[in-house]
Amino acid sequence: MKDGKNSLRSPLGKARGLGSAKHGTDHWWKQRLTALALIPLIIYVFASFYMNVADGGRDGALLWLRSPFAATFVVLFLLFAFHHGASGVQVVIEDYVHHEKAKLGAIMLVKFFAAILALLGVLATVKILFGV
Image 1 (spheres, one colour):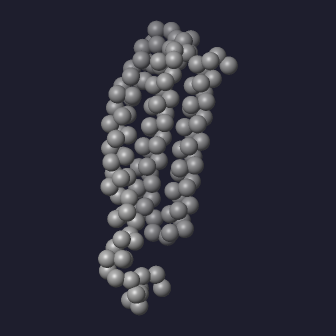
Image 2 (cartoon, rainbow, N blue to C red):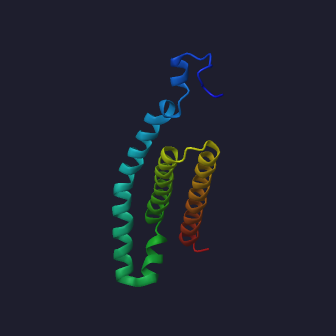
Image 3 (cartoon, one colour):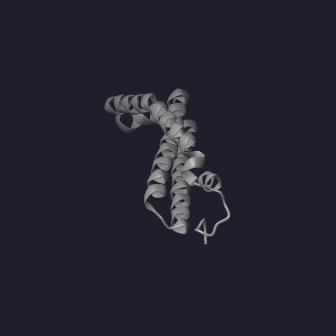
């Protein structure tokens, strides 16, 4: 019986053991900071990519991405975007999935796929940057 009526834990001890009371503020701040960081990254990456594709098509986009400056911002965009997205989906899972094992499994799955997709994007960017 987890924290039932017969529990010997004090009400303060029970409150301290709650998930949202532990990391909620930290998670909230990280969400806001990654969102704030994504604003200039999205503007730069999408605007400069569009301008290079409009001017030179695929070759213009590849030439743009071979610039260390552009590649750095694309990598930062990928890392921040996938971290921000996974954190947002984690909040939804924590709020709406009530079975603990399913919740843990879903969060692990989301974080795994976000990490894999971010890694694939970074590797593709690095491959284009160095012309491999």
